[in-house]
Image 1 (cartoon, rainbow, N blue to C red):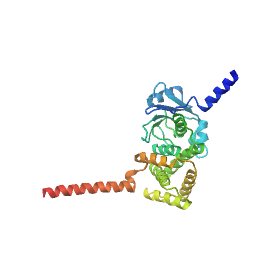
Image 2 (cartoon, rainbow, N blue to C red):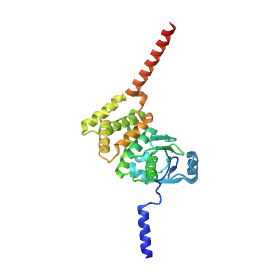
Image 3 (cartoon, rainbow, N blue to C red):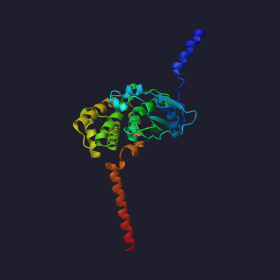
Image 4 (cartoon, helix red, strand yellow):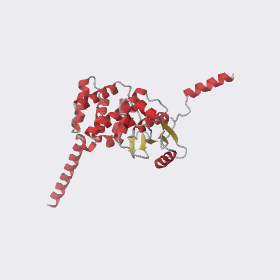
Length: 287
């Protein structure tokens, strides 16, 4: 009888993990800390984050960084220690994702947002930090890990891999065409895929070329091929494209370079014309 109860308890634990936080409410926080931080650094970061005393903490190891990023970037960028950390605060339903960073020198706010949207993260305010200047590679792994706990759902392994690859591909592209251009390009392409998924390489290439044209960006053949390979992989995954589109729209002011896009320039031109009309109208009244 005792053995049966033990087996039943083990089964219940496997079905309903102790660390399930699916009932987290708006304003609740979960923190990820790099495994190789000193105790003093951990305490300092928790204070910086404004974390409550009983905050749930998820640890991220350097081994996990290599698991998700080892295929895509050099060992020198990943390093031998997991340092970058984050605080994820649950936002109101429909609020979208916001990201702020401190001491992160390679991955930008916009790159994190893009990758997190691909992973299926939604409605969260995320703060990413480190006690010293670091690349920020550990943070994405930690955020996705923490989001799974907070949402009480498992993100498919291939989607996690794709999100990490996206972050790296965008950062590499950013080295060549500028960080904001790279993030905006990736966002524009994903937005178009969400609207009308391409059925062949020619259609996908047209989408990428149009996005590059909108941003006045010139892509090399190698960059185009790299983007084609990545987006083809993304298209084949089980991703909720409606949610991707929705979250991209909410994050547009952070990742789409709106004021530099054709849409934004059109808005500014109309705004300018309105003031010209207003000035002329006032002038005609007094004359």
